[in-house]
Image (cartoon, rainbow, N blue to C red):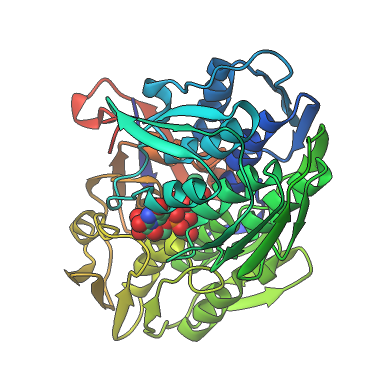
Length: 428
Ligand code: UD1
């Protein structure tokens, strides 16, 4: 149990190095179950979700060693097809062990996933796609059971470019017989990263990053060494941090092309961004303008950066309309932001941000991972002291968050607390 205590008003300055992407590292760890060879992953962020995924893999029977520079996974021993309920329901990404286990063991029993409370987050696309590859599916006692006598490639046309479903199918199809075509596939950089990793394990995949991915099944996959793609959401969070504190920072170790629409929106608001091959310089200050934003699957505006952007828009001149198209319930943090003095009104999947607010510190709670990070940004922009509870959500996805912010000049402290009001409800 911990909270952040932030004294706002300090412009951030200096350079920050971005970690590997949570949303890639977790899937690469799951994919490692498909080989008896040794896997070494570099640039894995040491965050709570990575430790949870390591525990999921260990419960299944893999050896996982987490070091400062790499994570090593050895799944050469006998594996269990059952994934532990207590671990899986903490984190939705655990569902991506289903495809690998089905491919390797021909069966999997996976607890229904948990994670952030940002909508129902169903898994119907995962299941119907695996069914098409030859899996039989039934649910009991909060578990999904999938089994097959052997997977066979097919054409899978997703109704929506779901990131998780694309990943699960791509992994299962690597060891299926024949060719699998995923139409309307997700195009996120993390999908490309997973395809690169699987290819280095011996898979035959083309088209990752486009909306049609073709996988030719192979007999087996081998061990591999891979470096995780940079975390574009962490990068975006720090860029907004520079903007809301009127700071000037270099965000290093990233691929700016992964953030094109996000960067164009920051520029439209009035943030000065200079792009380099592997970094951006982000300078805030002056008067910001309103702009409208609609979240969409990649390459559209990322839903994971919607909450930080609302904080920035609440400081801009004029009204902005933010439309959330990816997840329901992703405006849950707005009430907390308004307690800091913002003026944001939500109607269905639209939020109207009445800009020009002067934020003032108070006590708030992080309702989920990205919204929690957004409240930290708001606290740094606010006058006075802000306390943020439930920061376990933030620990799920940001490596050394307060240490990186402190190095940039923020006044932010992690304070351990026995205050039950800051107890982390595990399934929120
Ligand atoms: C991943 C990311 C998350 C990001 C999201 C969209 C991880 C661990 N999480 O989540 O940070 O915000 O992509 O970029 O990588 N849906 C269904 N049925 C399904 C699957 C999805 O209805 O079978 C719906 C979801 O409820 C949601 C939307 O589709 O409304 C998008 O989900 P999806 O793209 O699958 O996101 P995740 O993989 O869960």
